[in-house]
Image 1: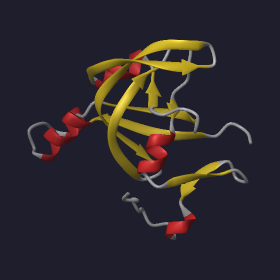
Image 2: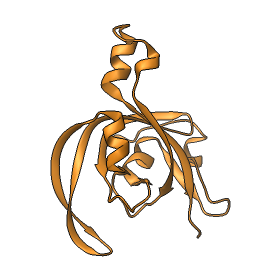
Image 3: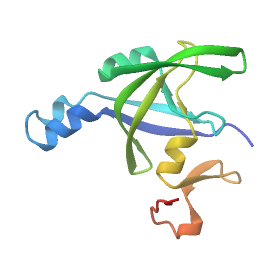
Length: 138
């Protein structure tokens, strides 16, 4: 399977909520749009420090992770609204190294009920749910 890249839009969810309450105009919602590698081996959506600063997200905590280069520490930021293929979900963002491209991990794919179609190398709605967005409850 080749590299799968999808376009995502990430917004500061606090700004989105303020715009919904008409506290700020929609034009003031901080947002970035990036092409992200779909990486089912990754957990989080990962963005660069620059993109996280543009979004104005709040630092939550540091975590230790395992990478191909060994164990390291990464920062987690709260309050991102992430849109992929016309579905969106609010979740945390992990900060990437400056030389690592944006990534979409399995948490967002699960939350949005998407799977990877290896034939067309795209993210698609889960066919088991007839294209409808469904959440599994356990």
